[in-house]
Image 1 (tube, rainbow, N blue to C red):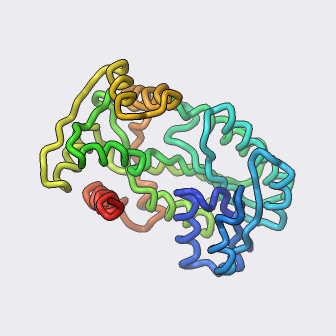
Image 2: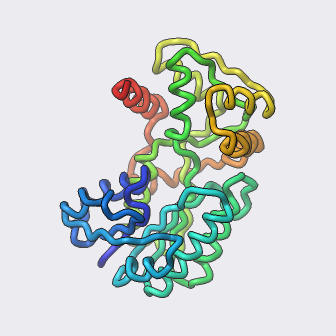
Length: 290
């Protein structure tokens, strides 16, 4: 059996590959990457590195050839771009006659009003149309998405948000990576949906947990969207990113990530990493890079 991970040099993909290599022989693992040079380290370890670009379907036909099980990791970009890219990947997987497709989706993708949901709903639908056994890994929210806010707090800034009391199921990327690896390399996951979420928390609760890790009180500044935009602009966020960041705050405020589940525990065989432990790892990582 040969399995393949797309986006394997990205933040999540690289963690998935490292997790797989702990239990799967390198010769059974292939990766599809836009820039094979970035994956030379994997090639040296015996992983089959292939050039695959979601914007160049002909490269995907070569990348997916002879693959039994594939993990399609969602790409970056706006919804329109991602839907096109993901559709290219799904149709290429179908042409390659893969036996199983796992896909990193978003919480409650089918019904969600989240800013990012249209991409994931369309991709899930494209996979369903192929008739190929699948697993939708509906990832809630990566704790690493909050690194810039954590850095700000460590530098003395307040925790700024316009998400009000909206709750999020934060979990570290490593947990999501291990869950994806378990599904790709495991059995019995055909035609499954996993809602992968940590304990639901508000912004205040996350800031409080961060304060416990840092040993200081973290002030939470609840603002409206316009003020949030102004603050983000003042700290150097590029103009083109502002609507996206505000849209995420709005999506959280509207409860689109309030999806709780014990699916993580089913796949990991352990509870999701406690928020204090996960925050400590991030804080230590930031401190070491200073």
